Length: 176
Ligand SMILES: Nc1nc2c(ncn2[C@@H]2O[C@H](COP(=O)(O)OP(=O)(O)OP(=O)(O)O)[C@@H](O)[C@H]2O)c(=O)[nH]1
Ligand SMILES: [Mg+2]
Image (cartoon, rainbow, N blue to C red; front, side, top):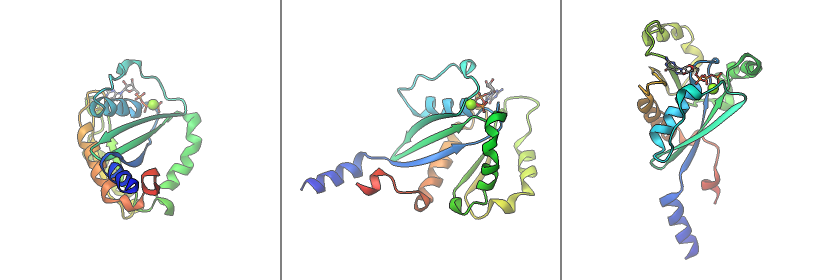
């Protein structure tokens, strides 16, 4: 009986957890994007003044719940000293361990007049399309500062992680 109730509780309340890595050059707006995401999706989260966000030293963590899904974000600082990790990152896209893991490419700062338009970003990536392999991939423009495109990006992410759930390593929910 206990097992049955525990199973029902788990089914009703426990979230399916997924982990999202946010990568980009320093000053790209990764932490601002994560702050906007947390503000939009966590009703109780008050949010940080975007002007108070400073360069990320190491790793900044954040999470949001979206229906039955929990997304855990890892926002890695992009400063030069941290880019020693980037060799590994470049290899990530072709790493066998990450085969099929979805890729969302955000062209941020679209509110700036002299920003690179999304069409141009897509054009630039055309030559590298073969490296992306068989995975869900989406390129979109956003303004993390103004919050434009944040909802759409997260919705895409949630759909994708659900669709590719078989790629996810087991979490507590799966083994209890
Ligand atoms: N105009 C504009 N500025 C933005 C946008 N997103 C972020 N910024 C600004 O860009 C600067 C850097 O933002 P961060 O979020 O700290 O950038 P980051 O990618 O986390 O940087 P690191 O932690 O150093 O890797 C800040 O001054 C932000 O206010 C945007 O969409 N539009
Ligand atoms: Mg940052």
